[in-house]
Image (cartoon, rainbow over all chains, first blue to last red):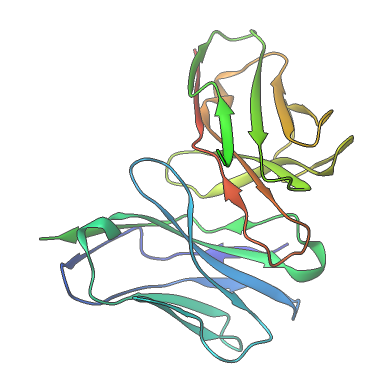
Length: 115
Length: 113
């Protein structure tokens, strides 16, 4: 079974600064996908960014980028130029390529962006 | 498109009561999922469906049943609610293809007294 660990229950950052959220996972498989989801106070789950394990290039979506270290099984999320609207819970998630039915989520990191 | 909708948004049950949560999607997605989210935890998969008329167990299926009689609807049933089933329930759907994004509904907050 796969496990996903987010070791930072809570973090805070000043508006306009950069913050990095950590995620590690454990799997014996080589083909998989990794995701970061954002859950604001509205509870809606929103996909932020995704990474295919076979791609060495780190994914980027505007102010959001990842540092994917496959050997270390690490998948951190960097948020640049933090905005107040980035305040939310952030979940890291893992999906096996050939069993694409079960997203395994980490426990989440609560991010607070301060003005 | 409304995307993924869930009915109801809130519900309070007494122990032993039954209820059904309805998930509907208008995106013609093949896959549908039911998750639960407990305080301080990520989402855990209860049941899922890869198409009309098919369902399968996820990580935490005990105490729940599901049905997918129509492609656009996925129902989650609690036959005899227990306090341990107090949680926020999310439905999601996606197109075929493992890489495709799962689209989530707004959630249903269920309290079992």
